[in-house]
Amino acid sequence: MNKTLLTILMLALLLLFIISPFAALASLMLIVFVSAFFSLLGNLFQVIIGGDTDPKGS
Image 1: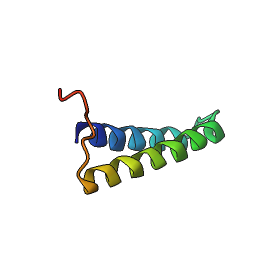
Image 2: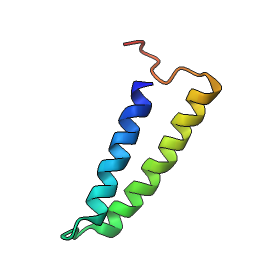
Image 3: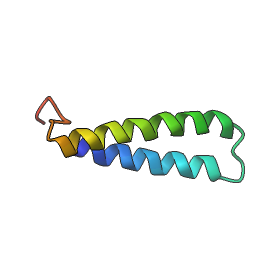
Image 4: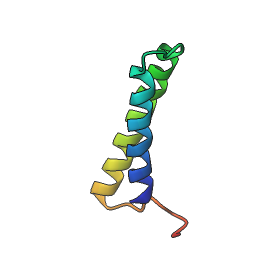
């Protein structure tokens, strides 16, 4: 579950970087945002199905 929460936090920070007024690399950040969004969806489906998102058990 920690991995899912960290992914959500990362997604929110990436969104802030994209919409910042001085975003020189906004198009590159948009690509990173889309890939992070799909990673978040994968993590959420794994949590819903009941898989372990933190295999190390820490």
